[in-house]
Length: 184
Image (cartoon, rainbow, N blue to C red; front, side, top):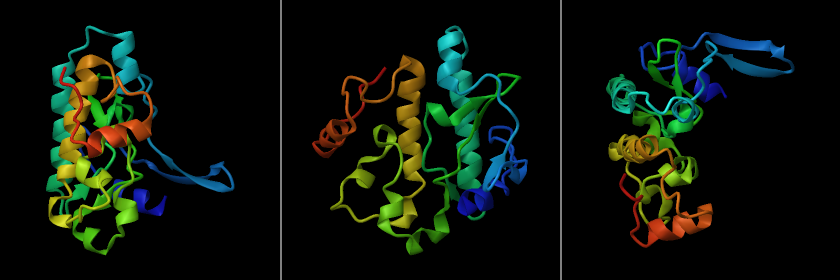
């Protein structure tokens, strides 16, 4: 929670969900993070209701948000880019949300590998799934690039990566054996 608030509160970009603050009154005794209400929901539910929506424009907007994060000083890794974490604003602009796994890339040297392999399995780069591969912080932003590629598949097809595989363990097995999401 604190890590998410520390990262998110620094971000100001049209393709990043605005951070409004923290409240302990709304869901007392638990703290909660506050953002504007996104009546259109996430991109996947929006596309289901509006199949004619311009998907390529949405993908460009997500890429712009990701570029902003990666060019931040220090760079920020979102670490969970996927359709469920892309919200559609009133003006139909897409913005990245859910910074719960986000980290500053410079600090990754100090992070344990257990935190680094968290994320949504179907969007997780193979090197984060394979326990035999050593993670080097220098290519950590590549994690978002891989997830973005999987998100392209998801947005264009309306299905999550590896949609033909029903359980997460089987997805891990497929990735460990060199499998990749099917292209749209």
